[in-house]
Image (cartoon, rainbow, N blue to C red; front, side, top):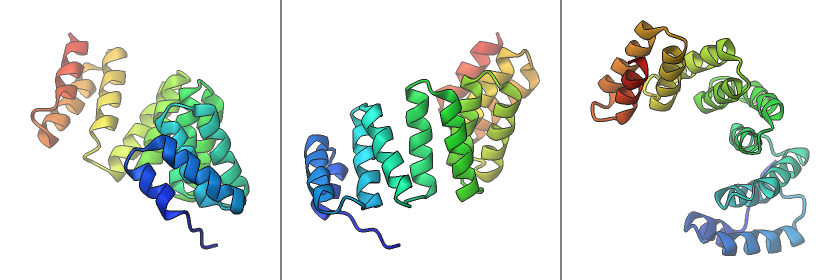
Length: 182
């Protein structure tokens, strides 16, 4: 299905004029209530102003209308995480992986959700999958390194810190991991 959104609404979103973007997306949706792309963009805009319940509602409506891509599942999973709905977050990230199994962002989001659920072995698996798909993922290496340091696996934590420095020698993540080891 070909989705098209209102150009002025999208332009306002890109310019971070979020109130205007919301107004224009809602006006467009009054005329085209089954436009999943517009609902996705509206949800994204709500997320930018931390209106997570409205963000979630918009994403869920878009998905129910058939708008399904890795971006919407990632954003919905993160929004659920922001509202401490960890199980829902995990479930949505898994749906995102079904949609796009090679998307490193979805695996990273799932890893964060597993960490939040204290499922550290599952989180480790997903961080490693993220790194496999995107070796220069500083965020995945950072959170994995912290997880290793917290469980006392200093060698693996140090390895992640060293990889971070290889990618970006001035990045503060590596030092934070090393501080956690000490």
